[in-house]
Length: 301
Length: 258
Ligand SMILES: Cc1cc2nc3c(=O)[nH]c(=O)nc-3n(C[C@H](O)[C@H](O)[C@H](O)COP(=O)(O)OP(=O)(O)OC[C@H]3O[C@@H](n4cnc5c(N)ncnc54)[C@H](O)[C@@H]3O)c2cc1C
Ligand SMILES: Cc1cc2nc3c(=O)[nH]c(=O)nc-3n(C[C@H](O)[C@H](O)[C@H](O)COP(=O)(O)O)c2cc1C
Ligand code: FES
Image 1 (tube, chains in turn brown, green):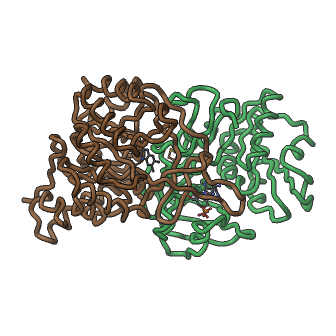
Image 2 (cartoon, rainbow over the protein chains, first blue to last red):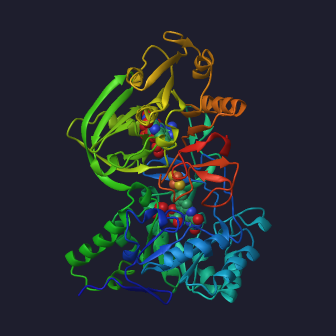
Image 3 (cartoon, rainbow over the protein chains, first blue to last red):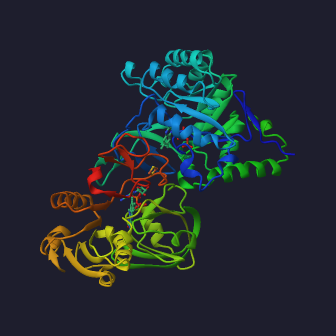
C-alpha cells in the first residue's frame, strides 16, 4: 500500500496537494475540471473583514514562463465568504485552508475571530498585504512585525495558524524564525516576487498598478531555495509553493523541506493540472519504490 | 465547460494577418452560444496563459474562429496545419441576449475590426429567431473579411477608415446615414467604438449589449484578473468590479463604466 497522507499543523490531508490562494477562487469555478474531493486541501482567495474592491485593470500580464498580477486582493469580505464560499466547500471531502488578509492587525483579527467557530481547518495569514500603519510596506518584510502579528493572531485563532511569507526579503530564514517565535503552527511560502513590465510599443506600464507579483514556473527555483532555507531555519512544517506545474516540481519542493505543496498559476495554464500532479506524485512514488510520501519531506539536505 | 484537445480542420489567412480556424471539438462546439468565447493555449510552455478568442460560428462538431496575429501566441496558432491539435477550454462567458426573445424586432449588430467575428454567430442566431437583422461593420480598408456572410442574415452596412468601401468613417457614422432605429443593439469592437455606442444607445433609449475585452489569467472567473467597473454591485465580490470572463464578456451598456 502506498501512503500519500500527510499531517500538516495537526490536520491530516489525504495527499500533500492544495491550491495556492487567489488562483482557485473558492473552488467553484474549477468543479467542472477537478474533483475537489481528490485534493488534500483547497486554499481560498484572501478574505478581509469587509469587501475590498482591488486595483484598476489591467491587473494581469503574461511574462516568460510566468505572469504578473496586481489584483489588489479584491474579495467579497467575510460575511459573503461565510454565507456562500465556506458552505460550498463543506460539501467536499477535502480540508479547507482559509487565506486571510488585512491592512492592520485589527483587520486580521476581525476575520480570524469570525472564522473561529466555522469548519475552516487551517488559517493561512497573508502578510504580504500593505500595512497602512507602516506607510503601506508589507507586514511580511520586517521580522519584528512578523513576530508581533503572528502572536496577536495566535491568541485569537481557533484553528492552527500558517503564516504566509513574502519572498521580497533579504533573509527568508530570519522571517521564518520570526513567525516561529510568534507561535505560528506552520509557514507557507513563497508569495509572489515583486516585478514590473513595460509595454515598449505603447511605452506604458503593463499593469495599472505599475508593479505586480511574479508567479509561475519562472519563480520555481527561488521557491525551492527559500523553502530549503526556511526548512533549515525552523522546526514548524512548511507549505511550499511557487511555480509548480508538474508532479516533479511538487516533489522538488517536498524534497527541499515542504510537507505540503500548493499549485497556483499552473491552474490558469491547465485547469485540470492539480489532478495530474496528484496522480504524478503517486507514479513517482511507485517508480522509486517509495511507500510513504513522508519519506520525501526534506530528504535532500 | 470542458478542457480538451481539438483537431484542426482548417487554418487559412483570409485577410492580411487575419486567420480563419476550424476546430473539430464536439464537446465545446455543441453547447456554444453567440457571444461566448474559448481559451486557446499555445504549445510553447513559456507562454502559459490562455488566449481568449470569440466563437464566430459553431455547429454540433466544429468551431469556427477568426483571429488576428497580435503577438507570439497567435503567431504560433497561425502556423498550425490541418490535422494538428490545439488545447482548448470552453465555451466560456455569458453571450448575447437570447435570440428567441427578440423575434420580430429590429436588431442592429455592430462589429469593428477583429470584433466582427462574434457578430457573425449572433447574426445567424437573431436571423434564425425571426429578428430583422442589420449588420454595421467597420474596417480599416477594402479588406472586408466576413462581410459577405452577413448578407445572409439581413442588411449590411460597411464603414471604412480610408473610405475605400461604404461610408468613410466609423460604424456609427454609417448607421446615422439611415433612420438610426433599433430595438436592440449588440456590439463588439475597439473601446472608442463601444463607448460611442454606449452614449448613442443611452441618448436613443435603445437596449445595448457590448462585448468587452480585458487581459485574462484564468478566463474561468476564479482569479479576478479581468474586471470592468460596473454601476451596480457585481455578483461575485459586491464591489462594482465584474469579471469580464465570467459575468461577461457581454454586458448591458448601462451597467458598465468605462
Ligand atoms: C473575450 C475576448 C474575445 C476575443 N476574441 C478575439 C477574436 O475573436 N479574434 C481575435 O483575433 N482576438 C480576440 N481577442 C483578443 C485576443 O485574445 C488577443 O489578441 C490574443 O490573446 C493575443 O495573444 P498573443 O499571444 O498573440 O499576443 P501577446 O500580446 O503576446 O499576448 C500576451 C498576453 O496578453 C494577452 N492579450 C493580448 N492582447 C489581448 C487582448 N486584446 N485581449 C485580451 N488579452 C490580450 C494574451 O492573451 C497573453 O496573455 C479576444 C479577447 C477577449 C478578451
Ligand atoms: C492572480 C493571483 C492572485 C493571488 N492572490 C493571492 C491572495 O489572495 N492571497 C495570497 O496569500 N496569495 C495570493 N497569490 C499568491 C499565490 O497564492 C502564490 O503564493 C504565488 O502565486 C506563487 O505560486 P505559483 O507560482 O504556483 O502561482 C496570488 C497569485 C496570483 C497569481
Ligand atoms: S481571468 Fe480570471 S477571473 Fe477573469
